[in-house]
Length: 112
Length: 115
Image: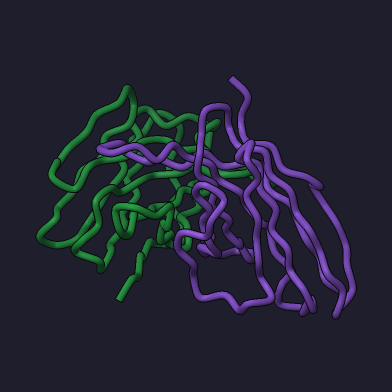
């Protein structure tokens, strides 16, 4: 089946690292994505990783993929108050559709 | 480069009515997808349009229908509205090319309230 699971809430202090975890079930996923959603807004693409990679770094963001365990994580270094938002993990299902399966989102709270 | 724009941003309807939501794709994109995001949930895939034809559909009833126009803009139509249709409706555009990453770029959404 197609299912993506995330923990619901994470609280960190400003300047610490944040790690948001995600598990997925579809082994045929080609790409996995991280999106950010601020209150009342749409989804902003943060980064993505191809399924044959195990790590991708993009400035303060590091994505780790363990394909064997179907586990994806997003690490945000030096977390800032502006990083407070809901973070969604999503997997792309099939090569020729725009169908993404999203998790329920992790609310990141950054305390000053 | 123009991003994805959606209209209206907010609307209120009553049960049984019909609604049309509109989306303009990001410049250069040829594919549009629609998602429903209920409060506190992740987005759920409704369907995707490519070259004006439906190209993939999620688990939504036929009263959810759509159109894509030659300029790649799109409409989502929902008939016989139910209370559970209250949600944020997100449009996303992408460029479908062989070997491409196909990442989706989302609009800000249309928030529908059904009373």
